[in-house]
Length: 227
Ligand SMILES: NC(=O)c1ccc[n+]([C@@H]2O[C@H](COP(=O)([O-])OP(=O)(O)OC[C@H]3O[C@@H](n4cnc5c(N)ncnc54)[C@H](OP(=O)(O)O)[C@@H]3O)[C@@H](O)[C@H]2O)c1
Image (cartoon, rainbow, N blue to C red; front, side, top):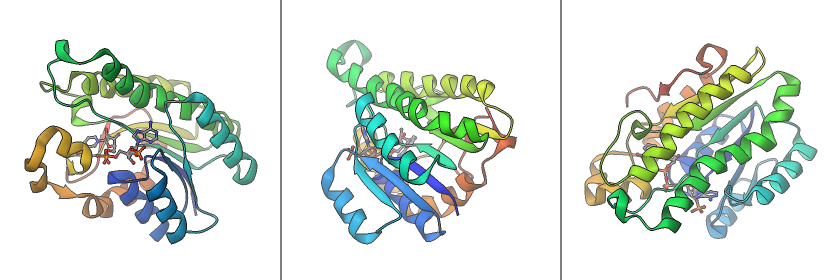
């Protein structure tokens, strides 16, 4: 049984992973910003699972969340940084300054905040895996999503560097989930997103694959099989 810290559980891939991890017998400590889906998750999955309102871009919120979880449950076996946002489609020079900053704050700084507060305890135990969600757009580019691409390339570099720092027995892995029909995909693909795999179907392969990641994968860019 693994203790799993997972960001972005209110919908999309994070929500589907939550259900998959719990169905497989693991404990999930999840967060997102929207209170209502978290209430629903709490009702559906009581203790020891925990679902809390946390904005990962706010370091003080991540610190308080991590302190509470670490005090009660100890360091996680698996930290999955899935929470992210995408800029509304626009050419880079037309992206409002605040929108560009928001994408960086959530997708890059949010991941850093979770690493900063959850990883020290994992390092002390010399045990645990950190999976940072990347994208095809962290390995190749497309028009009108340049801020998002910039953050996912950043995640690839950040994770590769982190992998060099971890003690033997741990792993940090940049993971491309593939292309899945979620709100995020609808934002950039519109109705065409409907022809892609749904999150629940994706999770059937992704959840066991993520649980299988370990030291053999440290620093290696991975993609969910079949994607
Ligand atoms: N769907 C795809 O095809 C695809 C492809 C490549 C990569 N990805 C990556 O996969 C991950 C999940 O994407 P998705 O498609 O499931 O997106 P999604 O449906 O838009 O869900 C994003 C999740 O992140 C949470 N979130 C956003 N900002 C947050 C913040 N500041 N603090 C805490 N939680 C926050 C959202 O909840 P709240 O709004 O309630 O906070 C939501 O639960 C992302 O890293 C994304 O870049 C997805």
